[in-house]
Image 1 (spheres, rainbow, N blue to C red):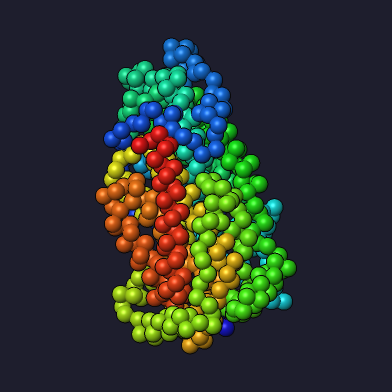
Image 2: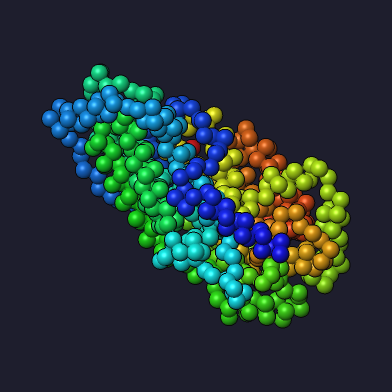
Length: 515
């Protein structure tokens, strides 16, 4: 009965939130100041992209001269917008002035949180599967669980990064002055820049992000389009981009996104759910090794979450490297060491301290949240605002962070289903978890793997915060023991694997031309 109440409450929460996603999730970055980069990174067109073969792979036509009647008409259009600004328009300009990459990252985290809801079972005890071809029918597509979310963050971030590399190549090539540098009577409502305004970096980000998100969250296309229109309109009202700047940026961003979309359609994520024969084979293989296999602790038993996600193609590493990152086996389920680890978790959950309970809930990142990868995106965003990064540097850093966490998901899920290890509460029914029981095998801890990868790349990007990130990762890892969800070996090995994956992202950072 309690389980039924939980799922019905969760479903009700989706309707309360509004399927149109009209109510924004509040983040501490909501009131971020206007972006005024300490360094423009005008040479970002020379940085190493993720998928683009070259920064000019997609052509951007030369802009019209600023003295032409057409350009003058665009300036006049901008002035007209400014003369008729409402209070809502002013708030929109202020909101988007905090930075394109930041705001679209917040929107993505909001969508992940909205769709991070497992479907409730059918009357016959089976579970429906979200259908991308019919996203508005229950269960809504997607179920934005941690692996799905990690991939979404990675694809959106990488597409924005490549789009900005291309944009900055063309900015330098064409070097068209900003409207306020052409006409001194143009009011600017955000900090000015010495950069060329063509193509608009904000429009490039909006074009890339909106196209990627419409693929990943097809039921929210109207909401995503609305955000895109608000964004580019705000840049015209702010006096920083004329319509041709915007149009060129949107076209370039969308073109780059299509390359990532084509890649995403063939990266094997669509087959990550597996089938009944696969699920049975995983159990049989585990039993053949003489181990106790994992099984779903839900009633009725739910199919395992994305057992083939370990086969998804990485944006950073080849398949053999990913397999090499898989750790050795966990303690045997029949071993004395496993018995000790089970007892350790039992002792923790039966007498938790107040601090441990607080840590469990701080790092829970469960149903209805932006997931563990989203939590690390929020941590990064809060710190990077203070650093006053340029848009391409924001995008580059987000791409590094999220590609690392996507690979963390791939290696972690490969490991989970390779060993098929049971949860502590399966091995000892007296262990009561503090935040539910995830519907996939225990070894290795996803939270630990995500956190080890995130802390490692974040510590490279911002060395002054490296010790703090490491401490957060350790705390996030321990939270899963405190919650009764993982054994010590799950957490320690997960952190180790995550750190190794983060180191691969650091290797890329050292040669991408941005340092």
